[in-house]
Image (cartoon, rainbow, N blue to C red; front, top):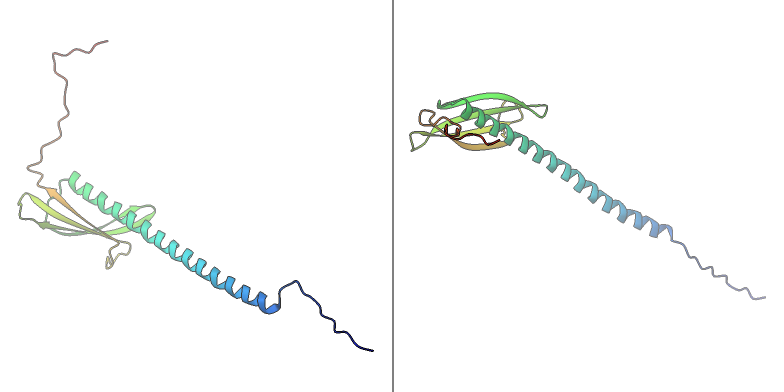
Length: 145
């Protein structure tokens, strides 16, 4: 009696095919996770730079409002967004004697070694600034009711 060979057709995947597919999927997911972490780091850095720049702008506005005009370096700290920011202000002379250059560096750490933001601005000598005078209506004009 002749024996017939039984051939079985399989419609599923072999173990090797499944392992290769899982390896490809793992590599792709690792790349996605890496990019997600990188994006998170970039967003954090961008947030810190924005906040540090706001601290520098606030300090320049304070100097203008208080008519600060002295040359040299000053250091201090400010609170913004629940954090303490450390700034250094350097006021320098310019060729125009009634104008001073201000360089404000803001860092997240107290030693101020690595500033996150640097702002350059100018201050006008308070002696030459005109005070703000609101416009008043003429005395001859009467309000219409």
